[in-house]
Length: 501
Image (tube, rainbow, N blue to C red; front, top):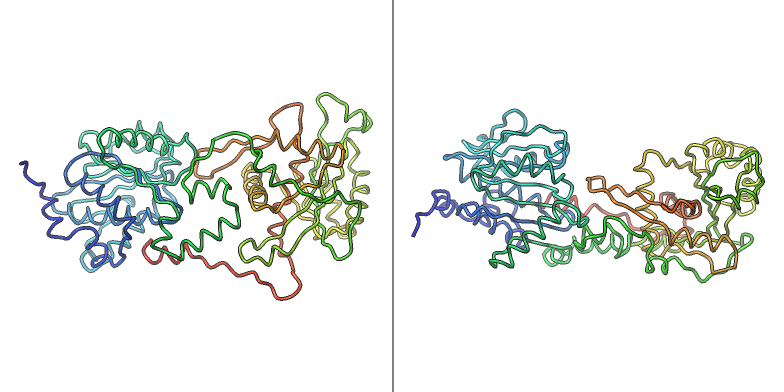
């Protein structure tokens, strides 16, 4: 029988990580955290050189697992020496946060005063160290060696080529154990590819390498976390991409149809189109602005191939009853009417829009103030017009449109957007044509940016953009008569983080 590594013997004297976590660190790991920790330690201490994927739902404690593993191994290897290398998509803030968390774990009676930092990115305990290196494609990290363990945090956001060229060789000569931490995103991410590879290895030898912990697994041990996630599901909808990936650990397609049949069904209302405001109802409007044309008439522009972009104003009846729902805490929006215009000079269009919004007694107007829309929106924002009732929206930089897309999906997924019934008009037909043709593509970076719109060159997205701007109304502080039932959401995740997550 081969001799046990000295670190294995020391670990038995020191006590296993459950004991270390509870009595030394004072931040006990939970059962779902201990399971991957034991598997990783077994590989490290016996020189197995296995790879693992630790995929937890958002804020469920994967970073705490990593920090306590690092602290435990630093204690075991402090006499012999050795290096752990930890990578993340960015140095600031991700690696800095990891470094600070490790130092917090090491701030205990056994280790206090013995921890040293070198060059700002290395944390030492005795002769052992954790080296924190950025996996940003532009970073220079060649030369480090991972003799104990090689870790990749937020692996779903790390560039695969960068990892394979610069980081994988760091553990080659030592057969270091590799750990990929992250949260699910698309099937194209490095994390997703590693998980598929590791599952194949699991099937081959029966050794577990992939540890998935979704929100329901966490809630069994942490009821407060379950309460928090249920609120998030109610606010965004079960099938919102961020809910599916961050809490249910379900991959989404990197690109595809933004409004599939299920979402289109959620968007279909059973109310009739209205021609004017009703008493005691609240109305708001959105405006997507197109360019002007001085050479052709409106009918000529409508018939042009490709068709000219329209200026589209959408009026919503705002249902404030859902603001009182402590989970939704936001209004619902029924499309009451639509006004479209093509080619009218903005100086003339201003009068048409002003009369339209006054007719509907719009309490708020979210208006596209990008590019050609800036001048028109400035007219509408003037004190003699609608003043502060106008909420300008800029589509630049691209992140603004991405955020709008995610926010609009929240409104749709929670059933709070409804289009009026088919009234036989072009407004209705064109809206649903654009909705059906709307496509999305999500990036692999940490920003989770979404590029979306109608890609078919003969079809515009003016109507769907005007509709999507309704998501900005969720940010308005709506006043609801009577005592509000809305509850201020306490930051459960921060409280859990302070408690050892």
